[in-house]
Length: 319
Image (cartoon, rainbow, N blue to C red; front, side, top):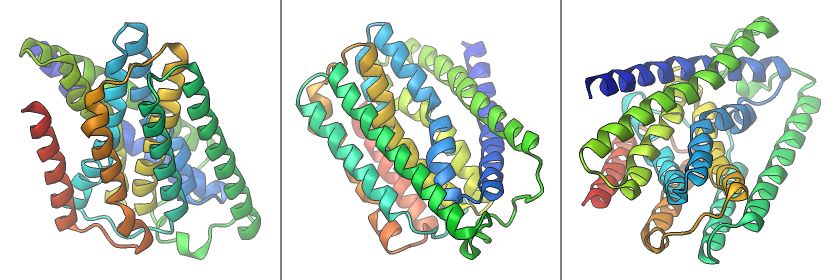
């Protein structure tokens, strides 16, 4: 058991280092390409930090425990908003970023689509095709937005982006940017795998059920890449990366992860999830509305409230 705690600590260290390198690579990539940091964080960063959820969900379906996959995604999305934004806001505060209203509305639409399909029964291959198709449309839209921005800016960052990218190196060579991205994308799932696997062994040793593990321990564990990336982004004052990472990760969790996992095998829906947890997930997402539309900053008080709400949710589940 002592060795499992050592593995958990090692996994956390790997996550923090990988999160830092991924943020560096992402913001410098956006600067070199003339693409807003928000778009990069909605794609490269968000997908990279969601890799643990994808790997675990596919493995859960193949191992005959698909409920773990669903609980993992629902729990991770709730944690992404309340915990992943709450902790850095509580420590550093997160300044108001640029306009993310369109991405936020797309995330809410994806969440509603996910819930509707859940009420229609188990997620089968046709559900997966719908979810993956919706994600593909979002990616195409993001690519078009990036191209439009590059044409408008003629390959240079827009004036309002200078503050967000103030610590970026405009002369960073391509090989170094690629190295940062690769190390971050590889390190995040490896660190999460170490941490989650060891944490599950510890939890099972104390008699915690698989359902609770999926909604709590696995969900929090697989959200740690988002936490590591968001903490580093908040520390470096890249508010667009912090918010974009959460919004993009939540979209990818619901549309990409469950979409792909349901193509591997059917995913039954626990009625308890439909009674409570999906609505908690939706409510947590809607809480971001004033910060998105009114451009409110997330101060330390907001961070405390978000984190406290998540702790209260965990206590309710464990009770």
